[in-house]
Amino acid sequence: MICELKKIDITFKHTKKGALISVSSLGVVVDDDDLPKLGTRWFRGRRARASGVQGEGLGLYAIKEYMKQSGLGIKFKSRGKVVEYQGIEYRDFIVEIIIDKCHLKSVPADVAENHG
Image 1: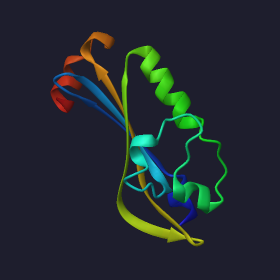
Image 2: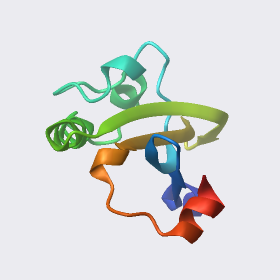
Image 3: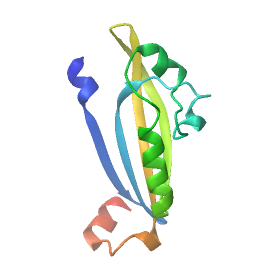
């Protein structure tokens, strides 16, 4: 189980509007009502606070602010099967970075064909 907690998946998808980078790993379950608050300075979800996992509520805030300053979009998602480890519930936590075409340099034709 500990290896699953350290696994990170990164995908890139070319879309008609630009591109989508998705970063996914197991994280403490985020309740649906906490999702819109992620990325707010000092905010930590109820389960994250209760888990004992350290954090100050600044990491996602910094990422969100950087994306905003760069003109990029960002979304946070928590979904999938819940697994429990040492009394803490985990499931996939996903950060999606949305890049519109004006922020992309040229995309090689083979990438566009394979991921469009």
